[in-house]
Image (cartoon, rainbow, N blue to C red):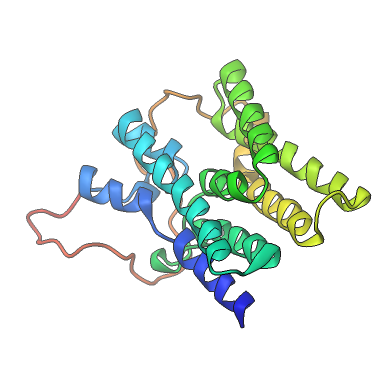
Length: 226
């Protein structure tokens, strides 16, 4: 029962659609209709600037950390903390509020790591910052930074250095985030990936295959976003 509560708590917090809400209430747009189609801070930066992207990143990191902290405060132990952290990443990537079209999970993953495994999170963040500084590819930095976490998880699995729940969280969570970047990896290899600071083209991301309408605030015909 407690583990089910941890999973639900993490998912619902992770699914909070920060980038989507900022896009609508600041730019009157669905950021998923532009650039990479993600609700993450990088895509927000391309359309609304680095200031609002910083807000999105801070909230996304915070919601990941909050999910684990709440699990800890509720006495769910290591299994509950690891599960809540993992489902927070899942929630951010596939949010129920947005027809399961969300972000890549990096910022939320950083937030969960900083509580579950701070040293591992710091190592992954350092790898991300270094890669982005050298290449200006945020996606490449994300993959390399998360790759550090994945390697640590595999080593922990082999050596038994961490509880198996934490190890599973590190391996599965990082694998999910890397998989979410598969299209970015293809574009980096093809030389077509946009670098940090390059604007997103209009309507860059394909629409969801689902015919269901998007969750949008109700607006009148004269104020509908273009």
